[in-house]
Length: 110
Image (cartoon, rainbow, N blue to C red; front, side):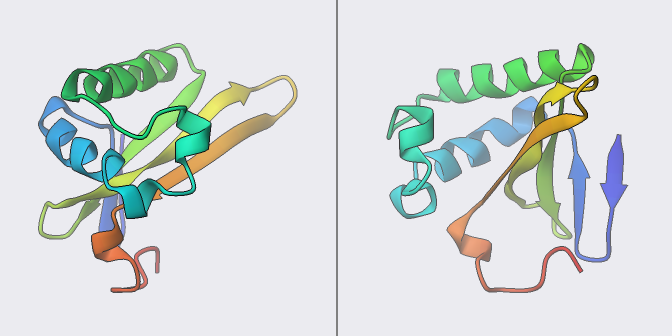
């Protein structure tokens, strides 16, 4: 699934995205408020790969809907998506992590 907008597109994460996710997840400014939720302040490339493989498995089971956030030039700007989808209770958790390099640059979701 690919969702295309005027400024970004959302698509499923691919292994070629892992180095960009690695940089984002290891940036202390970007992650400063999320470190307590993840329980770590540094990530290995293997941990990053496993994170997004787990997201993909949840998607295949209908328990999640993860996306890579891609700029028009193909740059990975972050990731977002729904996880822990409870269809019966009609609830889900939504998360968004954007690289500090795109903060305040353009209204991404317009």
